[in-house]
Amino acid sequence: MQKRAFSAAALRCARKGLLRLKKAGQVTIELLLVLPVFMLLLFFIMEMGNMGFQTILAHHCAYELARIGSLVAGPNGAQSGGGDGLANMKMKNVLAKMFPTSPEVSVEGYSHDNPIPPDPQSGQQSRDWIVTLNYPAKLIFPGSSTFLSDNPKSKRTKMIKVMVRMPIEQPYRR
Image (cartoon, rainbow, N blue to C red):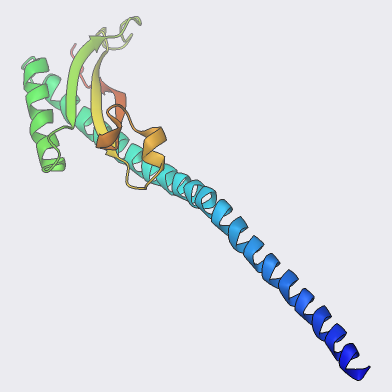
């Protein structure tokens, strides 16, 4: 009788052990199913931070180039100024120094007369220098580039297009 009680107790312990083993396998399977989704979500969040950094970089670069272009295109002293061609050439030279290893970054600028009435004090029409910067942002995290990159997807880049305006300074003439 004692032997039977021992066997029944051993059988109960064995059943509990099997249940524990089944639950341990269940946790492993759940982890294997949830982990890729969690990692993809984490990579998307980190890629958004990377894209934010590159967007800020492109905007600051465009503003700096617009400032340079507006100073070159505007009048200097008694002369009429360098014009659009000289300003574009100067901006492209500075851009080549800003991004020496990225030939795919491009910039283009043009002057634009504002449709507002002339300045009442000087009587001159205000002009703006409009700059367009095309910056291919590199996507660095796996998974997110499949959804965020431009075609072709294998390049893993997203084109950021920035347009900024900078007023062209004009001297006061009486």
